[in-house]
Length: 144
Length: 60
Image: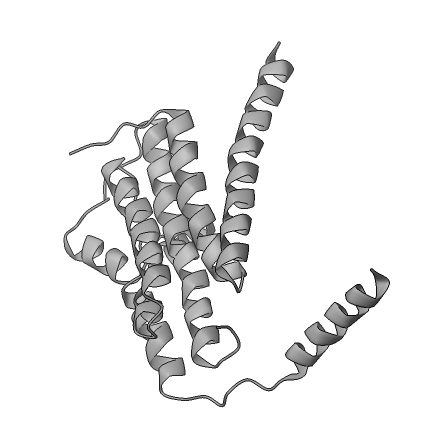
């Protein structure tokens, strides 16, 4: 038991010590595309199922937020909490840009579910930031 | 078109999709992804239920 734990620890150390692949064009394209279209950073690297699941999960969360009359934050909110909301929303990339272009999500929050909708969209953006980082790790060979 | 979710269904949907993303991005193998996703889902939904009952107790 102790030996297997030690072996596992050594294997983990060896893995951590392995240098990742040097930066390549994919390490730039995959995160950029993944930000613009959630899951696309994985799909372009032939992680079809992961990419599709990310697209469905993040896309559905964002669209549900919109349909729940959630509020879209803009860059010039003024309030620090509005700026944080904007950073979260911005993570959704293309979904956020298209929503802004179509003037969606601009209503005032009138009821509790609408506030949930705002949070859904912010969380969708934040989850996309994580997905972008994951796409980058795949591109540099740090993750399979 | 407007969607009106109940508090529980909103928590369920949130937990489901956040868990899928967490599972995919935080683990290496498919098996580990599935296990971690299920763990996150249980923690999200369980946490919401526990917090809800705790608030109900505090209010009494």
